[in-house]
Image (cartoon, rainbow, N blue to C red; front, side, top):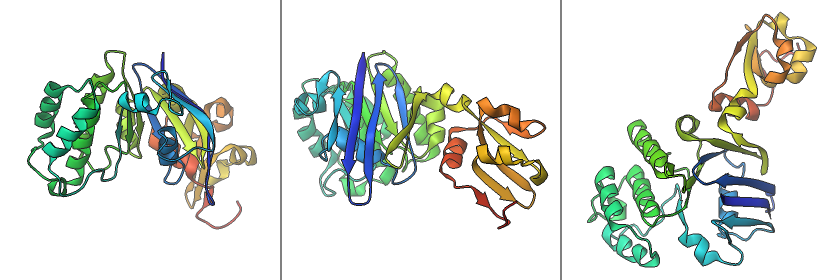
Length: 289
């Protein structure tokens, strides 16, 4: 069963537009949602959840069409924003007491467990929390009403490496029953290397690729060589070509490996794929050769 189905989502602004964004997530998986700043990640999430009105398209979450049954959709999800979400002077325990009233499936035992795990003091006010602790509190609220789908917008950006690793393990545990899923928007692609099953890549408001993470990474190879090894044919097929005084480097589709004879080739990380995809061909030497 698909917990999330986004179909042909469009939203136009004066200087930016989403263009027929479509992807889906089955039960029991984590999908990484990646793209550079301004690519359309947050606009997609806000349009999906009706925080802003889409011009066209459909979003089905847990079997509910958000345009027709927004209340049931929002009861079945947990949403975490990378920005401040609460009044700064209110205590944690006050926010929790209000929040839990909206959910029939609120799990107080899990909530208390997460408070201990995240080292959160209920008597603290939001303004007394660090950026990382604010995110952890949002995650605690999102996970404690049996949300079938967690939608996370840059949840780990304010956390130290140890805290990020703890969250990754928590996310894997959350989906382990095969009934929950996570849509995880982030710039920290190393986090996705540890937990994501699928990757959806958005660029300039358009989905470039949505597939399992292994297929996504195996589609490309990194190439480097001396400047005299850069043939015209290879140059025309390079993605994110970077030329410098010592030679060149960049990425190429693995299906065109025959062009890379006698060159250095390595398998790319998610970050390296994203950098090459976004980098315009760059010639440090400033010439055309």
